[in-house]
Image (cartoon, rainbow, N blue to C red):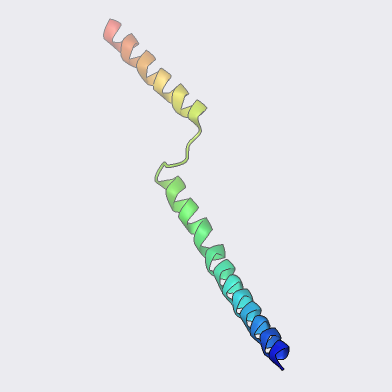
Length: 68
């Protein structure tokens, strides 16, 4: 009898954990792309090579214009 109660308790606990995991995955599935999209739109993710190139072009143009 004691073993059956323990088995039922563990089954219930496992079922609750599965339900919580499923809910969390469903919730995050919609949230994660939205957050990454917002961060990307606000410039938090960038290509360092492209950014470096843009800075060099800016510096070059600044120097070139000053010499004229």
